[in-house]
Length: 271
Image (cartoon, rainbow, N blue to C red):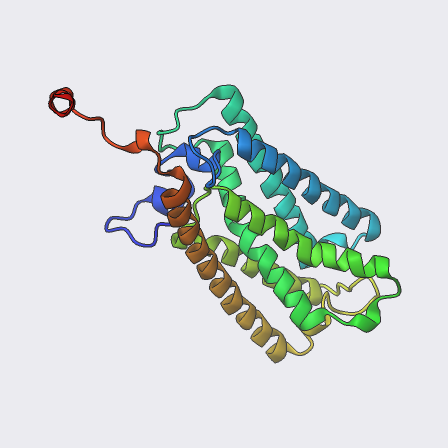
C-alpha cells in the first residue's frame, strides 16, 4: 500500500523497516488469501529472465569497462530485485511467518530497498536510452538490435511485471533511495572523467551526452534526469495505489474479511 502522508513520522516510515502486513511482500495483488505460492512461481520466471539478460550482457560486453555504464548498473539491480524477491517468497513458504507482523525482517528490507531503486531506475534507463542514445545506424546486425532492446526494454518489462503483480508497497517517502543512486552515478562519472577514465573506445567520457568537457551541458542533463526520475517515481506510486485499490475491491475482498455475525443476531434471523 502506498503511504503518502502520515501525521507522525518515525524512522521506520522513512526506512524499510516496518509495514502493515508482511504478506504484502509474499502475496500477489491478484489472488485471494495470503499464499506465497503464486508470487513464488512468478518471481522464479522473472529471476530466470533477469539472470539470462545479465549473463547475455556480461558475455556480449565482456570488458573491464562493463561496470562504468548505467545500463549495466540497472541490469544488476533488476537481477538483484528478482532474486531477493524470490528468496523472500521461498522463506515465506518454508518459515510460515506471521502475516500480520509489522516488523520487516532484514531479508525483506533488502528486497524492498532494491525494489524501490530498481523499478524506477529501470524505466529511467529505458527512457534515457531511447530518447538520447538510440541511433539505428549503429546496428551492424539484428542480433545487436535485439540485445539493445533486451537490455534497454525488457529490463523495464520485468520491473513493471513485479510492480503490477506483487503487493510490494511503494512509499513516496522513499523517493530519496533511487535519487541517491542517481547522485552516486553522477558523481562517479565526474570523478571518472577527472581521473582520466575513458569508454571502451578510448573516448574521454562514458556517454557522449554526458561529456564533462562540456560541464554546463552535462550538469543540465543530470538535473533533467533527476527531474525525470522523480516524475517516474511519483507516477509509479500512483500506479501502485491504483493497483491496490482495484485488486482489493475486485479480487482480495472476500466474505471472510467481514466481521462475524453475533450469535444472537444470527438466531433472530433464523427465527
